[in-house]
Length: 148
Image (cartoon, rainbow, N blue to C red):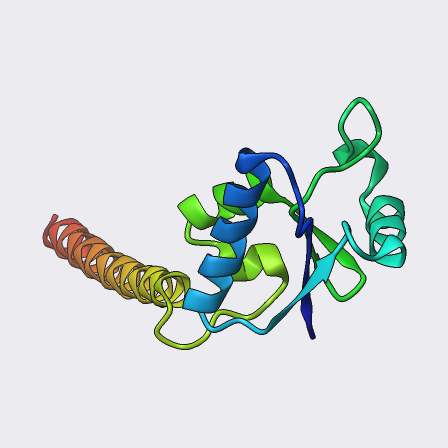
C-alpha cells in the first residue's frame, strides 16, 4: 500500500506550503512510505485528486486544496483531518495502516487490553468471594434451622 500525498509544488500560499511540509515531514519521521503527487505541474494528478475527494469533503467552491491524502484509491483526508489524527496519536488508523509494534497507539491499545484482562480477573475473584460468603451464610442458616 502506498500513501499518496497530493501537493502543489508552486503554491503561492505559505499556509498551504506549511501544511504540505507538516504532512510530509511527519510521514518521514514515522518512516511511512508515501508518494508525492504534484497537482501544479501534472494535470492528471490534479484531475484525479479532484475527482476522488468525496463530495462531502470538498469545500463549498468544490475545489479541494492540497494537501490531500489517500491510501492507494481510498481517501484518508485533508490537512485538518490529518492534524486531528496526529493530535490523537491515530495517524496509522487515519492512513488505514496497522501501527507498528512499540508505536504510541499500539502500546496504548495493549495497555487497555491488559487493564481489561486485569478487570476481568478481579471481577471473577470478587464473584468467587461473594459466592463463598453466600455459601457460608446458607450453611449457618441450615445449622441454625437444624438446631431448632
